[in-house]
Image 1: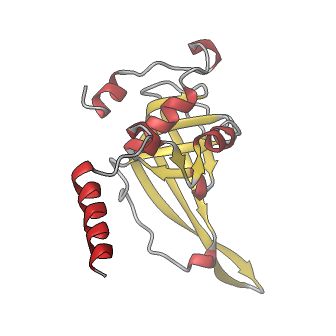
Image 2: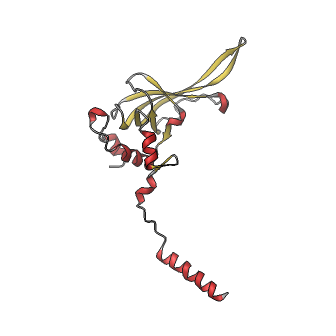
Image 3: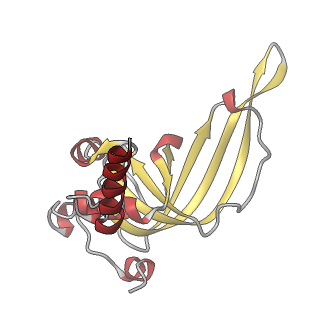
Length: 183
């Protein structure tokens, strides 16, 4: 039993002193999005017409009711947002564009209090299927919004960095993006 203990101690010492090192670069850890490896994430993200990072400037909730047999019943929530584009990864939005969008929530989550301006200042990724036009509110599925995360930012930048020219949807980083990175 003593030789087995020595072997275990030697292995433990080599592991601790030598360290466990991965052959992958640190950038590998940004290669995962919603559980998908990089190549699958790229395919899924290419299905969206617009991928943008926005800063929320105003928001408010709205209770939706429907009439059933003459009585009004709760049917869900809408949450309206106004935001400024901080970075455009894909699509025709430009840094500093103002956008308005709405998220719908089904009643399955139960009634929630109607809130105003609770999200102001938050950075949010928007994955949009349709057109984004200045001044017009567009709808976004709640599953197509995501709170800002530096790893996701790096992944989106990597996925969309070779998309082309400003004329066909690629935009260089603007001053707001450099400020976001602290540069």
